Amino acid sequence: MIAEILGIISPVLICISIGFIWAKAGRKFDTPMVTFLVTYFSTPALVFYTLATVNLSMDALVAIGGAATLANVIFAIIGGIFLALLGLPQRTFLQSLTWPNVGNIGLPLCLLAFGEEGLALAIGFFAVYVVIQLTVGVAFVSGQFSAKSLITMPIIPATLIATVVQVVDLSVPGWILNTTKLVGDLTIPLMLITLGVSLASLKVVNLGRSFGLATFRLGVGFLVGLSIVWLLELEGTAAGVVILQCALPVAVFCYLFAQLYEREPEEVASLVVISTTLSIVTLPILMWFVLRV
Image (cartoon, rainbow, N blue to C red; front, side, top):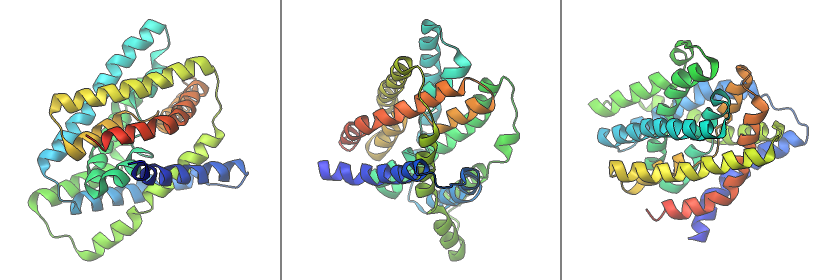
């Protein structure tokens, strides 16, 4: 079991370390360009290829979408109450307690732990979170709603088209599958390396408070994941994916939104760094648990 867990976690940590060391060495890394490539090309390609080729029932995809939606709602409610009790600003901290890093870290872990089926389910979870983040999430942090960012996100049509392919059992030309697989394979390593680069540039402030909130995010995430699995009666790979995705550290997007809308980005950066660092300890335990579900 230890060797299996190391085989899952080590590639993820090594890729993150490559980005971190690269940035600390002072080498140039064009984060905006890489982010654009991942957002508008490789991720939609990965989503389409995986969902169009994996052998999954629509019931499974609907269940994972429901689990992601439910998780987001529960995180927002619990996080909102917790922050109110502490007297901390909701617009600054709630997103960090609500949005785990289901993309950069969640996708590769689910792929390595559960194979193509796990990746497909993780993508379903991730796609729902993207929609919520770019609508309700952005509206809450910024104080205003705009559908523009959602309309321009290629992951949405990629998910819908792949779902149609699955439902009606369409035959996709080989050149399309080969192209989307080739381009999609860029996604996970680029995500992880970019995460490492981002972590290298973030600073920690208010260590005690950040540590407490980061611990809360990881602990509550695990408990909420367990509760959803029990409530929706999920089993096997689906159960493992939901628990894993819920119990991940704070998403880097939280820092980007905080910076964009001037919501104390240094505080959010601290949560990203500390929760990700803590996950080095929690992930082996978490992987041991989900592999036994």
